[in-house]
Image (cartoon, helix red, strand yellow):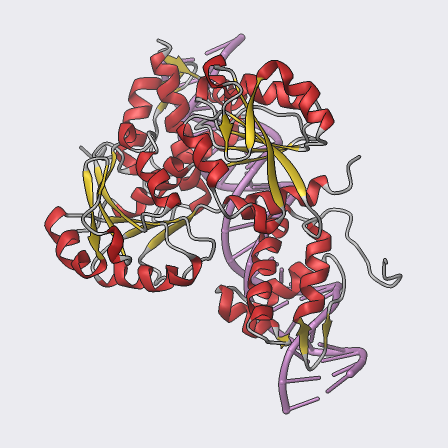
Length: 215
Length: 215
DNA sequence: GGTTGTGAATACATTCACAGCA
DNA sequence: TGCTGTGAATGTATTCACAACC
């Protein structure tokens, strides 16, 4: 389904990739609102960014708009979902089922977007074989087997900082391709592994820089 | 306690500010490990970044190192904590005490870093006056009064996407300076308000871009 | 020798501005 | 006319490379 005319730049800047899901989300909302077409100007107003940036970002992947008209929302959303790889489901496992891990399993935002947590692991044997919702907690020893059997490609890490590097190494050894890390530390990973860190404390600590002189 | 010789650039790039907490965290770890001095080279190895970037980042705020030796860890950490404003406590409130909000209140990472959630609010009256740990859930109407009384400057938003803009507006109206937003949408805020978004789904969706062609 | 701090150079990201098209 | 797509221009961030210093 490739368009023969489109030019795909070999290297898309990562900042651009980070913005695509934001575009996809707002387009999805617009679609639900029953809107058909939108210009980069209007999109920029909604997202608080310049129309030129939106057009430039999209131009890395193809020519999706119509001059004089704008972008067809359904079409553009579809293209973006394909580009991002979110037009299909992804299977993830959770490592660490303490308070944080249990909160993650109960987070209702993943599954509607196609991210399904289909296995959980913990190093504490007291937690093994207990159930969390409809998945059971496995031992770390069963990691290789379960990852393979269930075709899991994403690991969600919710263990204490001290264990994070070890867990990440194990995940990578057994074929995980992407890691969503909630541990308050940034483990080292080889270049072909893609990792995202969720770290609310770091966010707060960079906020207070701007707040400390007020009042 | 200002050093008279140091030059403080009037505009520090935001990317630099975002990295400072990362430096502070690793320095804290090194201090606990009993290490006294570290070079930008060693720090760069630990953090997977170039020594030049670390030196340049720090140079925005002063001259903290010693040629031929490196940085005294205790001293640098202390300076960074002061620069970031994390050498004192911050009082936050939580808005939205659904599953996500309750997970946030129970998150054990905030308080050791000086961020204390001292009030909670919810628009659902069935939740009012219930207790979460040792704080009670207040009505949205009491927001102005409670924020003022308890000198709260940070708002943590954990409401559904649809309510997020309204809640953020209310927080700003009543004097909140910083917002940590967990809602899967980026509300609009005036320039003087500093907001950080925590959005694991966006993180996953930008991950899959790099994963979709593997295997 | 070893390491910082920093201008200069390079690399990268954003914005401008306009030709081209519906 | 109205808007896209995109080279060129500008603005920002990173890295280099070296004088200054311990």
